[in-house]
Amino acid sequence: MSRGGLPNAEQLELPRVISSADLASAEAAAGHLSCIGILRVGDRFPLQLRDDRPDIPAPGCWGLFSGGIEPGETGAGAMRREIREELAIELPEPVAFCFALWQDENPFFGSSVCLEAFECDVAAVWTGHRLGEGQAVKLFRWEELPLDRMALLSRVVLRTWGNARELLELSSP
Image (cartoon, rainbow, N blue to C red; front, side, top):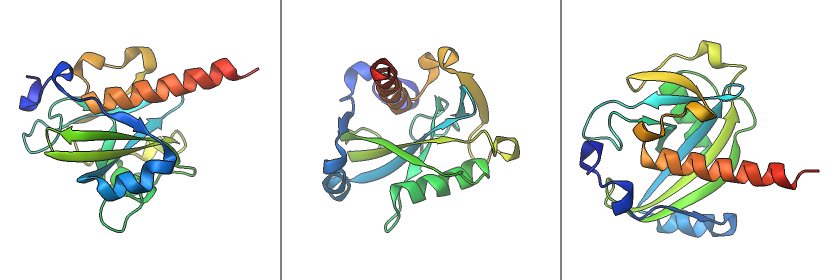
């Protein structure tokens, strides 16, 4: 078992990427809807050291900023709200939808999860941030990410995003 009594990655069904065309049906079928932000400050990524409480996913781990999507809220709207609550900053435009992940059975929520990932460059507003949730916030370069101390879903999201960026760079002239 990992921190917080959740199974290790080897014991979990890892989430899979779902297509944009399948997003609406996934949102309707999901037991839990969440958003997660791949925030960037130049070449660094802000991560949150999550509170060490048993009533939240991945307690005591580093992770991307995330939260639930409330009824009637869009994924992008939820991402804006969560960042306002957790960092006291307003996300600049654009908040780009990257991809969504589906997990049939999430051990924390006890149901299926649809996780919508968004990317946003927050360099222009970063100096005004103030941590509102979690123990700490820290900027990491890609090669410095604390993968051994990161929440599993944050690792999967960053790996998926990084792989997509690499493919785009390889296909550019």
